[in-house]
Image 1 (tube, rainbow, N blue to C red):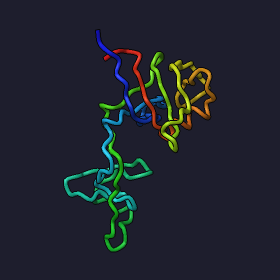
Image 2 (cartoon, rainbow, N blue to C red; image 1 turned 45 degrees about the vertical axis):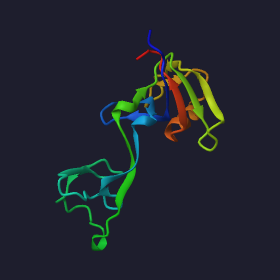
Image 3 (cartoon, helix red, strand yellow; image 1 turned 135 degrees about the vertical axis):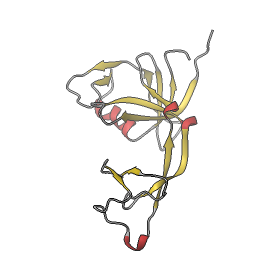
Length: 159
């Protein structure tokens, strides 16, 4: 008999290009690397490593090569490499009905903001997620995920 595992991590809204929206999700902190050099300039979006042929231009979502001259280089070549957290798909968990989620305050890790069993209800008027958590105002629920509140998750399905 397998035991349910308690995961610790953060809430987030997961969306990918072409998905037509996104999903309420949880990222397991075991699969988050902190402060990773990303290989591109955070000011101009240019690739900083020669082995990268294409990069994703930050904030514009446009693929470009390192020889594309339509985007100005940083003056005097003074690039600043983007350093940020790197999340692995291995830690991605879409919320499913029956999961048990506890959301904590980002300012006080002992304060519980919300705790309950996931019960997503269809909402066809919601263009991004198409679902709401039953009994929680959409604005409040959305804030937990867009602001990546710390959380604990117990999946309904055993691994």
